[in-house]
Length: 488
Image 1: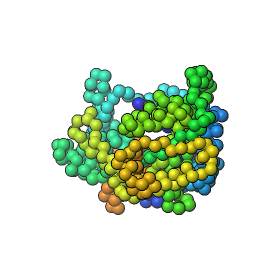
Image 2: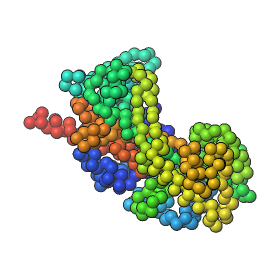
Image 3: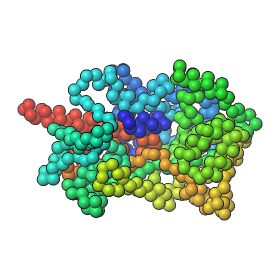
Image 4: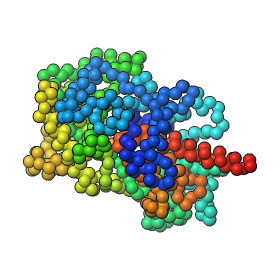
């Protein structure tokens, strides 16, 4: 779809932190990707420019009295554990809890497509043509001089193969899964991937498809307000639905207080976090919503049944702990040389024991909430369910929590890093340089989440749009200089 993942995500706007860019990005590839360099691009998104300028619209999520009460409760929960409440998440305080902003416009999604492809922006431009229902099969590269000359794609309705020729360059923005696949199908990638599929090697780049990183999430599920919780009536739902249709307000404008989040360190780091916490509260007897949510988690039926049963009697709070800096890396490999065959995704989640230990520490921190006065005042209880593999261990033992982590962790769908930025002299696994040019290929860049050397400490959408804005500057600077040279 147009807008990519920004058209289906949770809309949360999070930049990451200073260390992400100063330590993990700035030294990669030779260009300046420091915090001070990227911050102006983030601030451009946040500026809410006039309707005639391209900018993401960043604002607070709409809220209701019920939602305000949830957020107040969550704030008290975390203050009882010693965490700070922050005014916002966008200064240099990277530890604490606050309300995140969303990529929204008056309660509606503001995807990248809406932000940058609006009719009032593109008008009657003759330098933009969007082709939908098309599938790119390969980038055309001259093997002799490694020069990109075009892109081959298939129009799906009529299965017609078309070649789009280029005079300057091609920018690939197919994402962390499909960008490495497309490069490999075009003869750019590891020889051990290309040769078995009989793909002619144009440029050997061992890093293509490697360095896959993703955030994984671990839920801790609680029941609240057993004696006072009220199930939503049909009239209540109808009123809120009409409120959303007419005013973009009400419960459907902010489901579950998803915008109240926090960051903390399990290692007593006072500045930089290793865990992000998100929340989802489902009202009593909202069983359809609960079943739908847990089906996305792909849990076994007996777990779903236990949580649904608890929801029939009380509100359900999911505290979602996200591993920010995973050490376990995976890869994207080819299934075949056919462009319509999906690539193989090797996630390698929790391969490194340090990732497991971080999530165990996080679980033990959140578990302390059950001992607090404020939690008991809200009639908080742990939602228990059978885990045969884990129940043989004492509940408070690290062995139990490790088992819990390995059985209940799920993806947050933040894949990055599979065409990472770096210098080939320093990092043979890098794929693009600091201006996102593909190593050894002329006229080819990558501009998407796949170029991240290290995943950012937070939701990845904002950083991905920042990448697009920054590479746009690189492209303009190059061709403006080229034009000046021609005129001279």
